[in-house]
Length: 397
Length: 199
Image 1 (cartoon, each protein chain N blue to C red):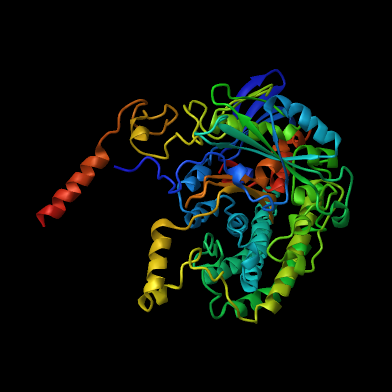
Image 2 (cartoon, each protein chain N blue to C red):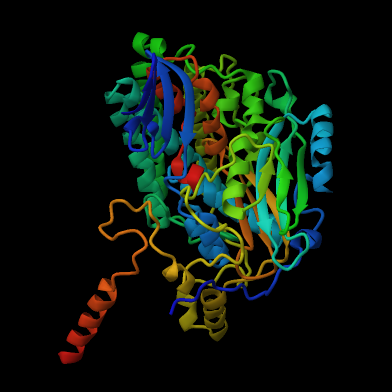
């Protein structure tokens, strides 16, 4: 941290944008008096990559490639939200085959666990508990392996497509998934043993960064941050999508609103996500189609192009000009690991999105810090940032 | 030469929101005049809207007024609530037209604290001014940037971008600010083509 300015007892420090405990590229200009924060101003935009502008210049299918890179810890939630929005505009929501919906739910819940693992590992390191990181990343590694098997890439598989999936699950996927399901409870038990009743952890997180219910609403906080303050608002329950109404799961909620409550809510959420995964796993044994039967939206399988002239033409059209989407605008939200992730998408009837506006949950959750940091210790600010779990790919886009 | 912006094959959009299928999404949609925005939002608050979800903007160059600001609100309970008590909260979308020759909107920061960053973002990327905003400056782009990148007439890349002088914030570069491209890339390319030509 650099001293920017000093006046009397007050010192102005610049923390970040390269500081490791800012979880990316956040710069916080803090005014401290001794160790107490008197004011915290945040500077974002260091990771601005113009994803919304890029998306306007790509085909509908190509755009999901860049959109996946917004929240790089759970790319599949972004892809899910985007394809659901485009499917609404196309009017094919009802036609998406059951298996495609199940696989989408499976991968999104797995991504939620993986994302919470990164949060837990890095949050614990901020506070000084190093070993937790390896346990958390072990689970994440298994999930990334699954993503790689399904889509071909560990982080950004671009596996969810408008109209379904890009190919069925490969052989061996389900047995790997079974291994993960079998191993998960033991790993979670270890993680909880490491932290939940750890006196140092409790000292550092209880009553730190308390966000009252009124403030949570006023700051537009969603996801675990809102649920740790007392409102069980979960998009999966309030506006079900992709068949979530058919799964049994609870929405963990706490009332304390401090960093420890957010920690507990996220841990419980990981268990609930695994509960959903177990339910999906039972349904995946039945094979079925994985995309809508409409060559205008999903290109026919590559191998058919040597057999059928029509398939070749569809393929050519799909690659050279994509597909058109009827004009209109739509707002679609999903429950990402960080809260309500929404896309407001406008189509002018063309083959590229006219406008893709993101509602990034991290941006709104992070804004609370202006209020939460004030009056606390500077070391507690680090805890608060960690417990808000911002992802800067999404804040800055 | 790279094209400045790949056009959509549909041509110009005049006003897609008017063409929408009314059953398409679950929000209540209203078009509000910008002079009436503040009063409408106050009325919504009184009627139980508790959260400002998001503010976005869209540019329709062919249309008057040219911009649409898009507000999303959510009506969550004001007290602790279970899943059943939250139910399906009302989601409200307000569309507010903003003309290009007078791109001013009233700021909502006095009503909702979280309007701060999204309003700055729209100011930054669309050039719409929010009157009454306490700290209206660029948020995503560097502070000395010129232009509004998300407007449709702002190129993605291309000749116009090439002519832009190197911005002064690129301190790590050895090239002084404002200097034209060094031509090193062009030279390297030329050398490469010459070599392939020789062999």
